Image 1 (cartoon, helix red, strand yellow):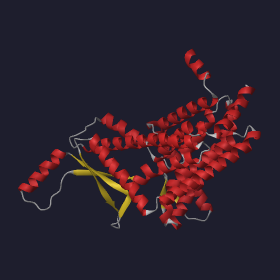
Image 2: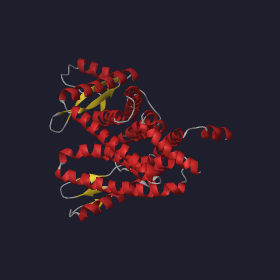
Image 3: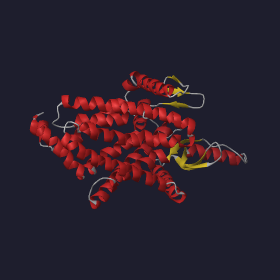
Length: 396
């Protein structure tokens, strides 16, 4: 115990903050996807969010009502789900405040109270806004849901952290807010520019086909006993969606037997036992990577360090995405019970819970933690943060 105490006291303020913040975020995710949260808290929390957001819509003159986590009107309905509830961005704020070293808990209470209150109210307006988008601008709903619900709300949490987290030191507050506001605006502009670039058909097609081909090759190498291929996803209007594809899998032995039987019976049409699930390239791959490039390139860091650290961060994110891809495929193959890559019920349950936790929100928070380690730590923000913390250390 004394060794840990000595080790902890030897760490710099920024190291203490990073270790504390990442540790608290990990603890949050363990709780957020635990049976306790899902059974006793989640439904009630989502229901409360739905009712309060519905009250905003009613005050604006919309005839809407709620049922559980659903807000419904005559023209549209929106359902609030785990991962789309704004809790992750709020947790980012809370964990960051709690991780500030040398600051007494009493000093943190004001920031915690007003910060959580601010983010909660903004989240209710975000949900109400999504309903309005569904009524008046259906084509933009998914875009606003993904970007407004995850990326923009995370940026708002960071801005709130800078504003209220440094409120105890007025002399530093304006300097910090100026730097953070410029960083966030630049980050969002870069994010928007990258997204517009990806709307160019040649760029979109190249990135999507590259990801799809890489996934197919990786899974064929990882699961050699399975038949694996990818197929185009076609929507209800018979239009191919470039941002989605089906991963098709099966037992090669079963498929070979069915093909041999069809040939023996001289069948012109026959069905083979394959299964599939849908990959969403945009949510799984594009959004996290665009956010990563935007947040790193917007950081006030020397360009050489910026490019090197962006490369390391991209490699870490790619590893996370490929890990999710492998686990998702393993779960699907084992769950369909086709005679290969079998798992016990308890193993299936563990894999399912891990996959469930690896949402878009988790990927964004993963990128943020990597940015803290490789971006924030090497940026001009580090000196501002250290000066702020040292003032509390000197007062202690």
